[in-house]
Length: 226
Image (cartoon, rainbow, N blue to C red; front, side, top):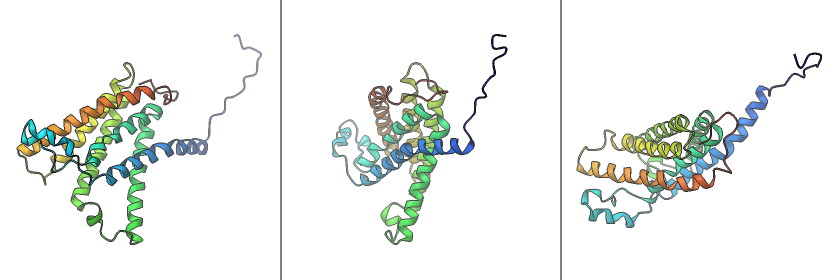
């Protein structure tokens, strides 16, 4: 009734191409951050972490010297990147960024092999079975992280990033370490305990930078705060 006699101006919605370009631009930083994180993990894969040998003083079964390295130690950084991306853009775009990051990495490896920069994949990276197990475990863990963050986001703000990082990390640890190639023994149990402690420590530690970045990485309209 109040607007009788007043011509309404139709609101134009962005076209498909405009929305596609916008999504593409938004993907740049998350994809670069994820690929950079995996590049960091790879570059540190042969650097040992002798400081953690003190865990053997608690019980020899907790000694991580045979398998722990700095690459493995910083791997949970992936979940921090995913949490920030999920907070800003939501689950759909974060899943897309994760997929594109993996396609970018795979494309880079294929190009290096085709250009004969890498002669033997297994000699440079890992056996095909181990690489496949890692890819499957980390992809599953990323999916768990993204979906859990989207489900828990809201008040209190720390709930989503903490549980998404912790459960995502535990999911990776369980899936990767219980593959058929591993023997179910006390050593495996000790490794799972150590990795659980690692992911719990990361889940707690990443709350501080998450809190500091909350004002800079704000959710876009349509996404609840986290």
